[in-house]
Image (cartoon, rainbow, N blue to C red; front, side, top):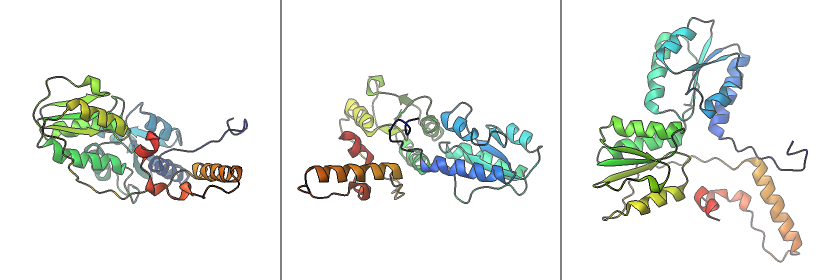
Length: 257
Protein backbone atom coordinates (compact mmCIF):
# COMPACT_ATOMS: atom_id res chain seq x y z
CA UNK A 1 0.00 0.00 0.00
CA UNK A 2 2.82 2.40 0.83
CA UNK A 3 4.49 1.80 -2.52
CA UNK A 4 1.17 2.21 -4.33
CA UNK A 5 0.72 5.61 -2.70
CA UNK A 6 4.19 6.74 -3.70
CA UNK A 7 5.94 5.93 -0.43
CA UNK A 8 9.33 4.32 0.05
CA UNK A 9 9.41 0.91 1.74
CA UNK A 10 12.64 -0.10 3.48
CA UNK A 11 13.09 -3.67 4.72
CA UNK A 12 14.96 -3.17 8.01
CA UNK A 13 14.48 -6.68 9.37
CA UNK A 14 17.65 -7.92 11.11
CA UNK A 15 19.66 -10.06 8.66
CA UNK A 16 20.07 -12.72 11.37
CA UNK A 17 16.29 -13.02 11.70
CA UNK A 18 15.96 -13.13 7.92
CA UNK A 19 18.49 -15.98 7.92
CA UNK A 20 16.26 -18.01 10.26
CA UNK A 21 13.21 -17.27 8.10
CA UNK A 22 15.11 -18.51 5.04
CA UNK A 23 16.25 -21.68 6.83
CA UNK A 24 12.68 -22.38 7.90
CA UNK A 25 11.33 -21.88 4.38
CA UNK A 26 13.92 -24.23 2.89
CA UNK A 27 13.47 -26.97 5.51
CA UNK A 28 9.69 -26.72 5.18
CA UNK A 29 9.84 -27.10 1.39
CA UNK A 30 12.04 -30.17 1.85
CA UNK A 31 9.48 -31.82 4.11
CA UNK A 32 11.20 -31.34 7.46
CA UNK A 33 9.45 -31.15 10.81
CA UNK A 34 11.07 -28.07 12.34
CA UNK A 35 11.70 -27.60 16.05
CA UNK A 36 11.96 -23.89 16.85
CA UNK A 37 13.42 -23.01 20.25
CA UNK A 38 11.85 -19.74 21.32
CA UNK A 39 9.60 -17.92 23.75
CA UNK A 40 5.84 -18.16 23.29
CA UNK A 41 4.31 -14.81 22.41
CA UNK A 42 7.62 -13.09 21.66
CA UNK A 43 7.35 -10.95 18.51
CA UNK A 44 10.27 -12.65 16.78
CA UNK A 45 8.98 -16.13 17.56
CA UNK A 46 5.47 -15.26 16.38
CA UNK A 47 6.80 -13.80 13.14
CA UNK A 48 9.16 -16.69 12.43
CA UNK A 49 6.58 -19.40 13.06
CA UNK A 50 4.18 -17.62 10.70
CA UNK A 51 6.64 -18.28 7.86
CA UNK A 52 5.76 -22.01 7.78
CA UNK A 53 3.05 -22.65 10.40
CA UNK A 54 2.30 -26.18 9.20
CA UNK A 55 5.91 -27.34 9.57
CA UNK A 56 7.21 -25.64 12.72
CA UNK A 57 6.70 -26.44 16.41
CA UNK A 58 7.60 -24.16 19.31
CA UNK A 59 10.10 -25.68 21.75
CA UNK A 60 10.47 -24.32 25.29
CA UNK A 61 11.13 -27.48 27.31
CA UNK A 62 12.58 -30.95 26.96
CA UNK A 63 9.01 -32.28 27.09
CA UNK A 64 8.24 -30.29 23.94
CA UNK A 65 11.13 -32.04 22.20
CA UNK A 66 9.87 -35.44 23.36
CA UNK A 67 6.45 -34.69 21.87
CA UNK A 68 7.72 -33.52 18.48
CA UNK A 69 10.17 -36.45 18.27
CA UNK A 70 7.14 -38.75 17.97
CA UNK A 71 6.13 -37.09 14.70
CA UNK A 72 7.31 -37.95 11.22
CA UNK A 73 10.81 -36.85 10.26
CA UNK A 74 13.20 -35.70 9.03
CA UNK A 75 13.78 -33.09 11.73
CA UNK A 76 15.51 -29.69 11.84
CA UNK A 77 16.34 -27.44 14.79
CA UNK A 78 16.28 -23.63 14.66
CA UNK A 79 16.21 -20.94 17.33
CA UNK A 80 15.08 -17.45 18.22
CA UNK A 81 18.09 -15.19 17.75
CA UNK A 82 17.87 -13.54 21.18
CA UNK A 83 17.91 -16.61 23.43
CA UNK A 84 20.48 -16.92 26.17
CA UNK A 85 23.38 -19.15 25.21
CA UNK A 86 22.74 -21.44 28.20
CA UNK A 87 19.07 -21.87 27.35
CA UNK A 88 19.84 -22.69 23.72
CA UNK A 89 22.68 -25.10 24.44
CA UNK A 90 20.67 -27.07 26.98
CA UNK A 91 17.76 -27.69 24.61
CA UNK A 92 20.02 -28.15 21.58
CA UNK A 93 22.06 -30.85 23.32
CA UNK A 94 18.90 -32.63 24.48
CA UNK A 95 17.42 -32.54 20.97
CA UNK A 96 20.63 -33.91 19.41
CA UNK A 97 20.63 -36.80 21.88
CA UNK A 98 16.92 -37.45 21.39
CA UNK A 99 16.66 -37.23 17.60
CA UNK A 100 19.17 -39.04 15.34
CA UNK A 101 20.20 -37.20 12.15
CA UNK A 102 18.83 -33.89 13.42
CA UNK A 103 19.59 -31.08 10.95
CA UNK A 104 21.14 -27.88 12.34
CA UNK A 105 22.43 -24.82 10.44
CA UNK A 106 26.19 -24.62 9.90
CA UNK A 107 26.30 -21.33 11.77
CA UNK A 108 24.42 -20.64 15.00
CA UNK A 109 21.16 -18.71 14.75
CA UNK A 110 21.95 -16.79 17.95
CA UNK A 111 22.63 -13.07 17.59
CA UNK A 112 26.34 -12.31 18.09
CA UNK A 113 25.41 -9.10 19.92
CA UNK A 114 23.45 -11.19 22.41
CA UNK A 115 26.12 -13.84 23.00
CA UNK A 116 28.91 -11.23 23.21
CA UNK A 117 27.03 -9.27 25.86
CA UNK A 118 26.41 -12.41 27.88
CA UNK A 119 30.09 -13.39 27.72
CA UNK A 120 31.16 -9.91 28.81
CA UNK A 121 28.60 -9.85 31.61
CA UNK A 122 29.84 -13.15 33.04
CA UNK A 123 33.24 -11.54 33.56
CA UNK A 124 31.81 -8.24 34.76
CA UNK A 125 29.22 -9.60 37.20
CA UNK A 126 31.71 -11.86 38.97
CA UNK A 127 33.48 -8.81 40.42
CA UNK A 128 30.50 -6.47 40.90
CA UNK A 129 28.50 -5.73 44.04
CA UNK A 130 25.44 -5.12 41.88
CA UNK A 131 24.53 -5.25 38.19
CA UNK A 132 22.16 -2.90 36.37
CA UNK A 133 20.65 -4.31 33.18
CA UNK A 134 19.07 -1.68 30.92
CA UNK A 135 16.14 -2.85 28.80
CA UNK A 136 12.47 -3.75 28.73
CA UNK A 137 10.83 -6.70 30.45
CA UNK A 138 9.57 -8.11 27.13
CA UNK A 139 13.07 -8.19 25.63
CA UNK A 140 14.32 -11.78 25.62
CA UNK A 141 17.98 -10.83 25.52
CA UNK A 142 17.52 -8.33 28.36
CA UNK A 143 15.87 -10.97 30.54
CA UNK A 144 18.67 -13.38 29.59
CA UNK A 145 21.24 -10.85 30.82
CA UNK A 146 19.59 -10.64 34.24
CA UNK A 147 19.69 -14.45 34.47
CA UNK A 148 23.36 -14.55 33.47
CA UNK A 149 24.31 -12.00 36.13
CA UNK A 150 22.48 -14.00 38.80
CA UNK A 151 23.96 -17.30 37.61
CA UNK A 152 27.54 -16.16 38.26
CA UNK A 153 26.73 -15.20 41.84
CA UNK A 154 25.94 -11.49 41.72
CA UNK A 155 23.63 -10.95 44.68
CA UNK A 156 21.87 -7.85 43.41
CA UNK A 157 20.66 -7.64 39.82
CA UNK A 158 18.37 -4.82 38.71
CA UNK A 159 16.58 -4.31 35.40
CA UNK A 160 15.60 -0.74 34.55
CA UNK A 161 13.86 0.97 31.65
CA UNK A 162 15.15 4.42 32.55
CA UNK A 163 17.71 6.15 34.74
CA UNK A 164 14.91 7.38 36.99
CA UNK A 165 14.25 3.79 38.09
CA UNK A 166 17.66 3.40 39.73
CA UNK A 167 17.40 2.95 43.52
CA UNK A 168 19.18 5.44 45.75
CA UNK A 169 21.02 2.84 47.82
CA UNK A 170 23.34 1.44 45.14
CA UNK A 171 26.94 1.38 46.32
CA UNK A 172 30.25 -0.34 45.71
CA UNK A 173 31.20 -1.63 42.27
CA UNK A 174 28.22 -1.41 39.91
CA UNK A 175 28.26 -3.32 36.64
CA UNK A 176 26.16 -1.87 33.81
CA UNK A 177 25.01 -3.65 30.67
CA UNK A 178 22.10 -3.27 28.27
CA UNK A 179 19.86 -5.25 25.98
CA UNK A 180 20.74 -5.23 22.30
CA UNK A 181 18.00 -2.73 21.41
CA UNK A 182 18.61 -0.27 24.26
CA UNK A 183 19.81 3.05 22.79
CA UNK A 184 23.27 4.28 23.72
CA UNK A 185 21.74 7.54 24.95
CA UNK A 186 19.84 5.62 27.62
CA UNK A 187 23.01 3.85 28.74
CA UNK A 188 24.72 7.23 29.08
CA UNK A 189 21.82 8.58 31.14
CA UNK A 190 22.10 5.64 33.54
CA UNK A 191 25.86 6.17 33.89
CA UNK A 192 25.33 9.86 34.61
CA UNK A 193 22.69 9.10 37.24
CA UNK A 194 24.99 6.60 38.96
CA UNK A 195 27.57 9.40 39.22
CA UNK A 196 30.45 7.04 40.01
CA UNK A 197 32.82 8.62 42.53
CA UNK A 198 35.81 6.76 41.08
CA UNK A 199 34.81 7.09 37.45
CA UNK A 200 33.55 4.65 34.83
CA UNK A 201 35.76 1.82 33.63
CA UNK A 202 34.98 0.17 30.31
CA UNK A 203 36.12 -3.44 30.31
CA UNK A 204 36.51 -4.71 26.71
CA UNK A 205 35.96 -8.45 26.47
CA UNK A 206 35.09 -9.09 22.81
CA UNK A 207 36.06 -7.13 19.71
CA UNK A 208 33.31 -7.67 17.13
CA UNK A 209 34.02 -6.91 13.48
CA UNK A 210 30.74 -8.25 12.11
CA UNK A 211 29.28 -5.85 9.55
CA UNK A 212 25.84 -5.63 7.99
CA UNK A 213 25.32 -3.12 5.16
CA UNK A 214 22.25 -0.87 5.25
CA UNK A 215 19.16 -2.15 3.39
CA UNK A 216 19.55 -1.70 -0.38
CA UNK A 217 16.38 0.43 -0.46
CA UNK A 218 17.99 2.88 1.97
CA UNK A 219 21.22 3.03 -0.03
CA UNK A 220 19.25 3.80 -3.19
CA UNK A 221 17.21 6.47 -1.40
CA UNK A 222 20.35 8.18 -0.08
CA UNK A 223 21.96 8.19 -3.52
CA UNK A 224 18.79 9.66 -5.06
CA UNK A 225 18.70 12.43 -2.46
CA UNK A 226 22.39 13.21 -2.99
CA UNK A 227 21.84 13.44 -6.75
CA UNK A 228 18.84 15.72 -6.29
CA UNK A 229 20.75 18.07 -3.97
CA UNK A 230 23.72 18.15 -6.32
CA UNK A 231 21.49 19.07 -9.29
CA UNK A 232 19.64 21.70 -7.26
CA UNK A 233 22.88 23.51 -6.53
CA UNK A 234 24.15 23.11 -10.10
CA UNK A 235 27.13 21.07 -9.03
CA UNK A 236 28.37 23.69 -6.58
CA UNK A 237 28.44 21.15 -3.77
CA UNK A 238 30.98 18.31 -3.79
CA UNK A 239 29.61 14.82 -4.17
CA UNK A 240 29.79 12.87 -0.92
CA UNK A 241 28.60 9.30 -1.41
CA UNK A 242 27.40 8.68 2.14
CA UNK A 243 25.68 5.46 1.08
CA UNK A 244 29.03 3.83 0.34
CA UNK A 245 30.65 5.11 3.54
CA UNK A 246 28.26 3.64 6.10
CA UNK A 247 31.14 1.95 7.93
CA UNK A 248 32.29 5.43 8.97
CA UNK A 249 29.19 6.13 11.06
CA UNK A 250 27.92 4.34 14.15
CA UNK A 251 24.18 3.91 14.71
CA UNK A 252 24.46 6.17 17.75
CA UNK A 253 26.06 8.93 15.68
CA UNK A 254 23.32 8.72 13.06
CA UNK A 255 20.56 8.89 15.69
CA UNK A 256 22.22 11.88 17.36
CA UNK A 257 21.76 13.90 14.18
